[in-house]
Image (cartoon, rainbow, N blue to C red; front, side):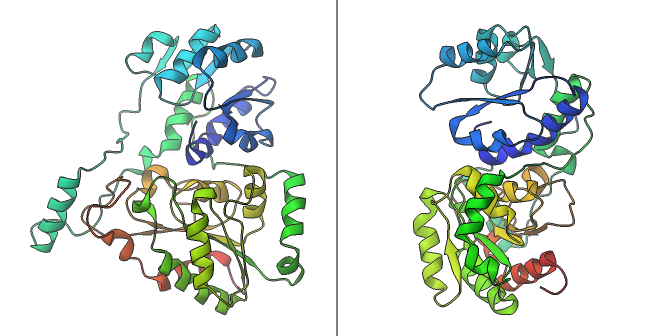
Length: 361
């Protein structure tokens, strides 16, 4: 998978394959940027990675050298199926759809009960908002069936090979060397016994996923004051201005900005040290959930039923649903006023974080 969150949602299927084939050699092919995700995964024996500029035939040659008997093609893309076909792997299992059907030996049909994500058009968003204002339409968000969660799709592929397709929590493991590095970088708050609270204000997909930064700041300030927590601000390199802006709003509050300053392995380690992560629906949300760290997530333009962290209904996590007639729209940029996320107040996020941190926090 190319996206961090999508890759994490495949881990239950990989664990089920290991369960079904305990003596098999499982090799994960992934983009170079996600290599650190799999090198410490308990179900994976080896990792093959590729750079963004590498072509299909280059990747296929690398796959051929692995000598695999079976390929489970987790992405739905045409290219991923073409790579395994060109590699000559005898058995190729993946979601069946034209034209990639021609490249697979085992075509797995979608669950008929699954409801696929559908992006709303800008025109539809504006129509729903106007109808709600006039009292002629629904005022709350659209709910999706829990059985439509993206993780079930990958489990279905594993089930085709005889693995148990039953739900399983995503699971990741931080490396010991990275944990030592981050323990050193966060030595002062850890030595003082202060709980670490993670804050992740960015979202790579687009601004429609981002709870307003001023609300992150208000919630973080309140939570730090009530718990004595040390704040750790996460994000990628593109999130640095957002992270620095958040830090500027939190003058006087003990915090460490790690946004853009960690490898993926170090990000896993830093998240594993947190008591809770307050985050948008984005990659670090999935990482934290798979590490067993509770997450608090304001959901606006996306659906927790489709891409939420962990197993649906996991009581460790607090998923706050923004209410708007147009939500979830799945758009990158809100064409109106981001009313879904504005409907979630900072005090609701603070209460959810306190509950996730547990008694005595």
